[in-house]
Image (cartoon, rainbow, N blue to C red; front, side, top):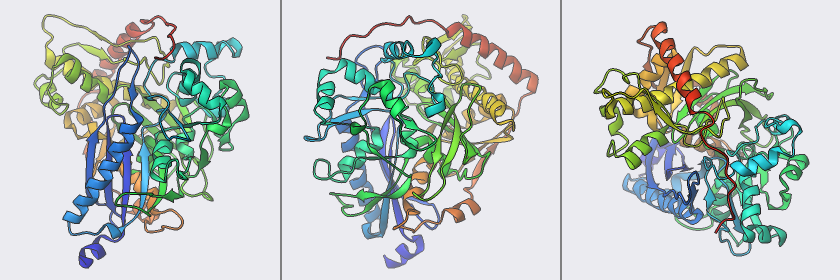
Length: 523
């Protein structure tokens, strides 16, 4: 056993809590090799049209189960739990949890990042601004006022859920994104749990000033949210606390990154101008802009990329966010029954050589970047008697690619430096047809790491390199990049541009479909 441990070096665990599942992965610090993992799907609830929730206790319990089972797997490999030196956390961002600090009980289900219930809250907030300008807070937080971000969800909870408002009035209410909820519970909960978050997750709330990295008085007043309910902001790589129970009791939790920022780190995008695109439930393109925030003129988001240590510089990023990517495939599986498993979409879509002039705009939660159009809704257009389920499946894959092209064009305009290739990661990237379609539609190479778990890897790198842990040399990771599979464009520029024009026409047809509705109080 000692020989195996010496071969792998110290090990680092990573919690990866996403929209559709929880996972715990264990990496070797000297090679970035993934040794073992365990995954558990999480249930999403849809109590009303446009509402998406999850049970915070299920999120927590699935994480705990994954830790225990991954550790058991490790023992089966002849490795010891004692070889694990630290734990990192990466998480679905913006998703909002509120809980009672005295009992530890959630005060409401978690409101998921792509939930649309806050459309009326956004309207009310915009009436407070000059010219009802959704970009009025960008100078403070880098973000538009939209249904996407946490502060708007907290405001809805305070307005519509009396027990949340009462708990805030009585100073019992704690707010956190999923990282904070997990950290508080894993470090003791009501018995001394640490109520903290990192700069990347805080930058997605609309409450943190992206220049001084503190909760902003003006923003808190705008949303009428008490600072006392907010977690303390820390860097992305430092010891926050220690595991309070389970197989890893006593281990430091020393890395926290929002999932998209974790992928930026995992892909070693440490130089200004480097970027990655992650394909999951949604799709997210992040571009490293260095140590100064860059304001977007094209609808992109200014956000924190990472801060790998409390005394280390903050690195900023521009972000393009797409709400629906893999979620469109799940919709074809669960709602229409076109496929039985998500993986089947590649085989089905490959049975036709085009989408048959069929275009699918999956604006189930409105349109995010670059439009920020929340009254858009999903459409499939160009249907004829010739159209079959394979054409629709292929159109769903092409929709992800067209949306990514819109992000890339916006990114190129803001940066002034056209991207020559795109690093990709996330579950959908295992679909070779999707990757080839993406290269065709972008007109540049697509580079996929052979080890796809770059999000969890980023959290492990942050945890392993933290002061007081110090078993992961991030600089050596940059010098030894991951092995990759490369996809190059195989269609003419005239063909890709013609199809993109059709896509843009389809997008316009999806606009202004839904009228805003005033939602009543929560049950």
